[in-house]
Length: 210
Image (tube, rainbow, N blue to C red; front, side):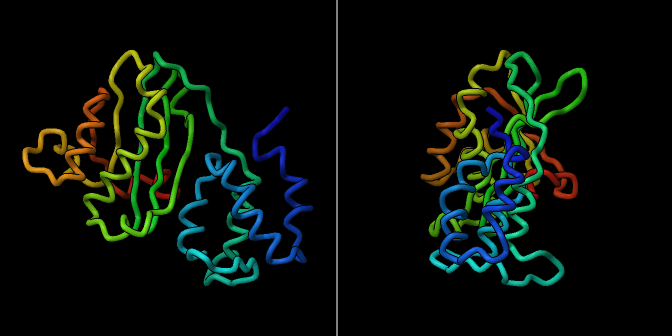
């Protein structure tokens, strides 16, 4: 059985007809899409920005210079990325990014044919997390991604690399002064073997798009 997003193109066209009732659209947003959000590189960012909590989903809402948000997600849902199988011996990279309202991450590996994505993930920030300073939002993005893919990362035969566009996080594991929350995160991170590398936000296009 083909469970990739591309296999759902025809059924989604039928399900997401322009005449669909708002309550049916909301069902799709809340039930169907979350199952497959790992395939989408725009889901949480568009959903968090354009669909505030407890709002009614209106797929006819126009956004300046872009498709209505419902169709942004629909379009992404019918274009499947080429995901590779995880292979523990290969060099592994985790790219993370945090915005004002969401986290995004990409798990990739490097083979002889180049760098290939293994998995995407993203989520909205919780109400309490929205108040974090940018440093802690970016750090939360790393912790959340590594927890998400912990089983993969523990199986690696060598250390992996975390890419972030927040330069000070390179030195987090050697920091002596931490808040209570940061100390708990540091305890979890100490279980894994990795290095944090700064990469300019200009280059961090994939995880930023999440």
